[in-house]
Image (tube, rainbow, N blue to C red; front, side, top):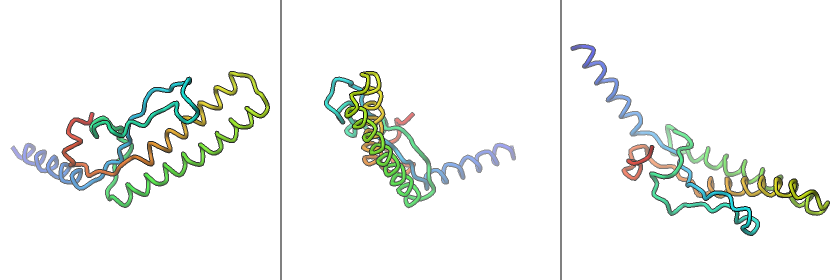
Length: 134
């Protein structure tokens, strides 16, 4: 009987702890479309229900969540510009089509990641919109 009470207390404390936390959630994106115009190969699907967004982190405060969100967006923005520079260089040098496709894919992926993190949200762990989240 004491074990059952202790387990219930621990589970209750855990629930209370999670209820006070924050999730960083990132919207889903479409599959890569190589035929789309440059920077259009991915679409960020921010209109999807929050329960379909990807969990990217769990934080004890909205401040920590938002700081991580900003850092991830900034990192991807930097990587996008580096990748874009390589893509432009490959175009100028009239590189092999395989290299051009690769450099475009890298640049598009970082741009999509930047867009997704810029659209991401910090939501309370007890937000009812997350009920269906896997």
